[in-house]
Image 1 (spheres, rainbow, N blue to C red):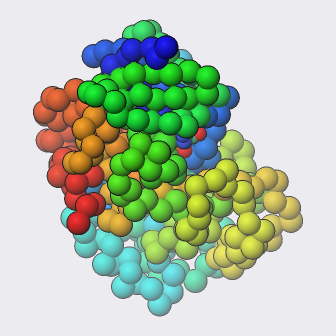
Image 2: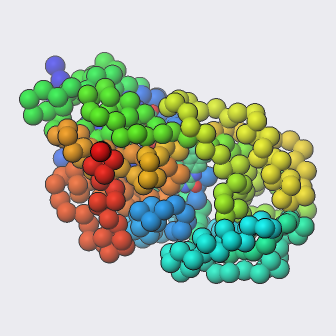
Length: 375
Ligand SMILES: Cc1cc2nc3c(=O)[nH]c(=O)nc-3n(C[C@H](O)[C@H](O)[C@H](O)COP(=O)(O)OP(=O)(O)OC[C@H]3O[C@@H](n4cnc5c(N)ncnc54)[C@H](O)[C@@H]3O)c2cc1C
């Protein structure tokens, strides 16, 4: 016998959990998650950055609109601040000045960064002393996000509002019968008015299960690794350093340095594992830029950043399948955009207009509407 609820959310990553917490204020919500714990895939593998100028215009609007929540979450949401100042130093390699100039000419970027001299850049991050750099720009207002605290905060809020998480329950059948969706997940069955597809890299697979047309989501693998702090350097206060054409970044991470070759290899949805070649490329690019020698890679991992064709998320009801709600395609920005994306999703999924503060920050529902992805 199927249990009757208002909403079934598929996937307990940052997207599913945050949206479910918002939805639980309006009705009964169940999250079904294939893994035994939330956050096991992309959410647990991110670089944990909040930057207002990373990503395209729809992403930046969602990021701006998420800032207030991340900087000052509701009382009792998290035991410690969710954001810690980090700063991001964007650099252009010699001969690539035009790329930094073109990027800095975008109005959001002009407003959000200041040009830095190479002396300033090298004073803040001394291992760039010999780096073949042409230009630099600094974003002050970027931060480390405590991803686990954010996820756990939303989970607590979700449960306090009566929501239930069912782990170890893969949605294996999703069927429209009459006015409701019937979802079979693990050994449970649910009947709901609305299904929220927050299945991350698997979102098109979930759509297929439900007999809904896909939106062309492409999971792209990204690799990260940790190395020891360069000897003799106090790295905790270093900004994140990123090549403005995104071929390399490195960032302080709990006493070590996180390095990524910023790879985007299209793959099938899976439990992504790092490829040795990508790890070697990351080490090589870092060594070339900084002149440092990496003696040992302490650990490495990979995760999936999933994009549709225009690299903006899909947030909204499917135009052809009543009650089927998309919340996916966050690419490399699903942590920093989660608070605004979750509120928007909850408003749209309950038939309300988008929150006025989100609109004031430039969040454009049409730019996120899954209908744009249909021909
Ligand atoms: C290396 C790396 C660095 C990143 N850095 C940043 C960053 O600095 N800042 C930032 O904002 N973002 C960053 N991101 C992106 C961010 O991690 C993602 O956008 C975000 O985690 C996506 O969350 P999600 O909930 O959509 O997906 P996921 O966390 O992958 O969750 C989807 C869940 O759905 C479940 N699922 C799938 N199919 C089913 C099914 N049939 N039934 C039940 N459950 C199912 C999966 O098991 C999974 O738990 C990074 C990502 C990577 C890989």
